[in-house]
Length: 303
Image 1: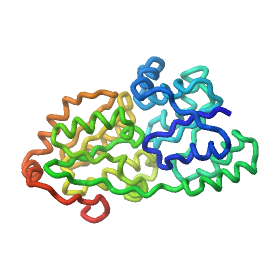
Image 2: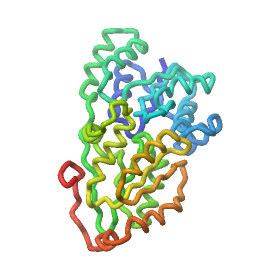
Image 3: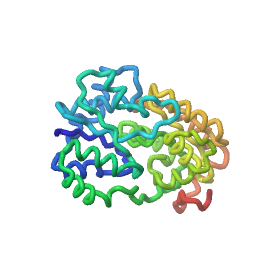
């Protein structure tokens, strides 16, 4: 089988599915277009759908003829049909796509899904067992260092959004550059260790909360009590109403300046200047120019 792989830049298990396919003797096919080209291609077919969906479709189409494509599952927020059933919805909307297979992006249910996939690819149970043994060390969240919470002569702001969105260079690169140009030090939520975020999300008193809701809440909870963080920038993909709604609810609960931003692959963010002015009012602006400070960790201490 020719199998394509769409592993996000923020995959919890980076390299797992690629390594597993190689152990089965199937070299995974990767997207053949850069991010901007993939986005343009996806928009031709789905002009009114969210940015992440357009990118995914463009990358699938760029791979050429395949038997199947693996789509690591996105943590869906409440009401987000695309994240909950991406393969089914894409197959309904676009004819002629290869078989789309949703696979776990975390340890839960991973080995069972890998076993099922392995039998489809190789039809050799013995080879599947050997492949699983080889990749088992890659089946746990990797240890990740905490991002620095402060930077000399800069005011810190937290950037909160879905991991799959903020990790995209097409989104993160221009946004980080724009914040840096305004004298702001950005701490992006997708850079926080996922295990720590999920642990903090245990405080969420909503039993029906989805995995995406929990990740967003956990990231805000981790960063919200830090004195160095002077404001929150909540980022959703363009035309992603479910995520924008979830982030809006979080923004309403904050006591620091907030801004809701829609990312559509743009490089200009004129609304950030007013946000910077609100963030740097009062003592925040003075402390930012006080000279180098020692980086504050984002763990439990200091929350």
